[in-house]
Image 1: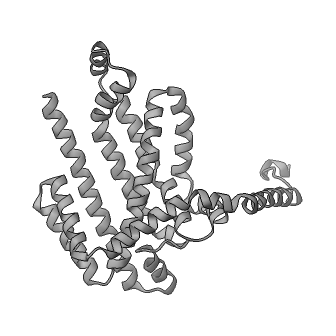
Image 2: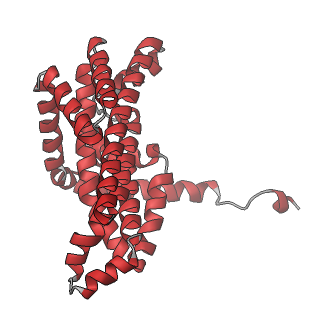
Image 3: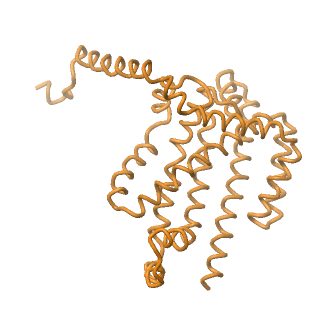
Length: 295
């Protein structure tokens, strides 16, 4: 009767043999193709290094002015502009400017890669139910799989450094932009599409002139979510060598430096709020513009 209470499972020798087979296969693959895969990702590393160099070598007041101008263009609200400027001044005053610029450059590069890959995938999903049924489970796995799990193969393939961290952040942050691009295009009013068909629009003209502009507020919400998720990965990515605000937080956890952890954690929160307010404001302005245009 013991079998009723004990779950049937593989015996230890078989389990050990299975694990060794998979581990040896992956190690063999890494040794054979690791260098070639690193070469493929070399342009990403170069892009990240250049972006980081630009952020670190631009005078602090120019960066603050640029972000203030961006906040004003997006929101037309002095409160958001003032909040952004004060947050950045405090970050600089407490000696976290360099780490913050490294984090901002990382988020910028990850967001650009996520948009370049994610928006076309979202468009393809919106145009085909079959593609959507294939990609949706993949996105579910990407969003639910603990980030530590996919760090293992990434680190084994590419080692410790910027590129593995970049890939880990992109894998974590890309699903929202894919999902919301797909959703935005699918939510476009059928009557508007019928009208564009009546004017003789081709499939690409309909996408470019009708579907994407009308889906833009939803796509902006996806961009906002992608930026937030990229920032959420900053501390985890620091475990595999990504420089920025995550590393002092990690050091603080390991050594119980309460103040260092709190200050750098609050700096991450401050940057997240700035990005969130600016991207949300852009989305609202686009929505209002479209309502006026169709009103």
